[in-house]
Amino acid sequence: MINWSQCTAVERNPAKVSGAWVFKGTRVPVKALFENLEGGATVDQFLEWFPGVERAQVDAVLEHAQRSLETA
Image (cartoon, rainbow, N blue to C red):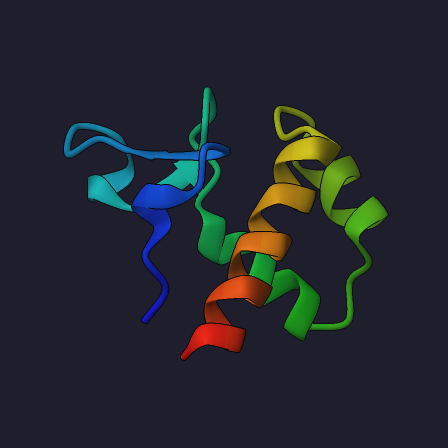
């Protein structure tokens, strides 16, 4: 399980999207990124479909996930 509390690009608020981890300043769940990538979408497509999310946020989330998997 990835500890998202250490990733500065995301936030969690019980009053926002049922408490799911979302990209900071948006209502877009982090889970949406991984679901779209699994479905064959590119990062550019994801950013086009979710205009509130910034590339730097996606990069930070992917880097955090990679680091978490390396230490698991």
